[in-house]
Image: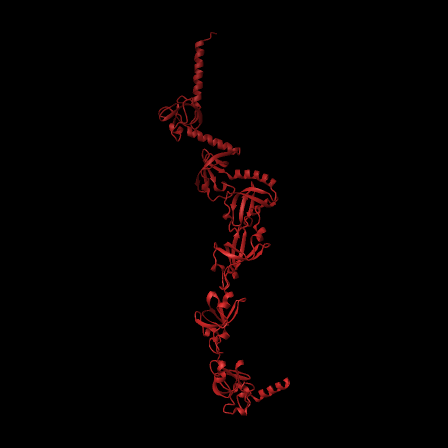
Length: 563
């Protein structure tokens, strides 16, 4: 059989053409193919994808932010086939879609293999953040960190690694988690940290969270509690005064329970307790300066130095004022001077006095107002037992109800005085130690009893008012200041069984003065002797002795016993 060389050449050409045609048929819309950049014009990049026609991609897909192109002729690139041929006979391609589909495939593979993806947080949306990992993904707020985050905006612009926890290519839905990655890292750190922790050791940590009662410190995979009482020897009102989240601190391990994984930390324990040397720094009786840091119902706390506070009791704030609450005298933040009254280093207590800085006005009161001197003042307060009269230096003197008037008619001080009244009084007694200042108003006038013998001599007859009736007699008022006693035996010549049958309170009666004892403020009266001679009933006794026969007998018997 003769071999036709020409026919063989034709068959080879046909086979080559067939293979090329078959290859072009594999170019399917919606798939990614490999191509070579042939040329770049004003609007398009021309790419050879081994198809009967070249493909074109808009230049904009290769243009960088600064206007330069990221591709040049001869570069091999992956492209996405959008349409086989357009009206110009060219294949429409897309580099961006090819890149995006490749990213989806990579993400799908990472999700399947539980690998991490890297991305930049780009914005805040409802419920979380958006992340650019080549395509747009969602990071829920609960998955941003180990603990809930209030301010998500602070993460925008930061680059992190994430774990893909939900992936749906058809819906274009990708959900990420940073928390899952942090938990894994934390668990690894935790085992290392727990293995080396010991009570007493000083460790580095980062403030992770702040509460009212303390701060949680991240020691590396495990949190320790730094309680507010272990932060400083000085007063700490709130941990936020000393710390902020993210701050690095050196703390001492106070307690460690490996079974419960609980760690108690201290910061002040890194320094010496100032109370150890307190008695070397401060002495009783010395003056100190400090700042008011707290007020209580019973006094004010003053900070003398970091960790050292003294208490000014409310009773030590003023010599003369009755301080109802420390806030009436001091405010938090006031810089004051005080005197040390007592130091109890064992119980960490210092007693301070504020009034001791000034001279005690009670010490000079006796010199300013000696007993017997007269003062003027204003009625500051009225009680059932007397009135308080204010004088200089805030001192109040008490005028007892018995020293208000010589009259016995004053039942309550408010019957004759009211607050604000200006009065004159006499100094009766001063007790500086007990801070008592006694005054008398009635002493400003002479004692009516000093004139009683002249005004109501023995034997004189007067008309009086029955003020009070007793079982054995009656009290009779001769005037506003002088009262006398009428014994039941002096009411009538006849025996009186019940004095109420004879006398009535408020009635008027004529009485005779039958005895006078001025020093004892006693005045004896009689109704039955009115109109009778004194010699018939009593012996003359100018000194006010016995006034009846019975008194005389008792007096005589007493003299016999003495002899």
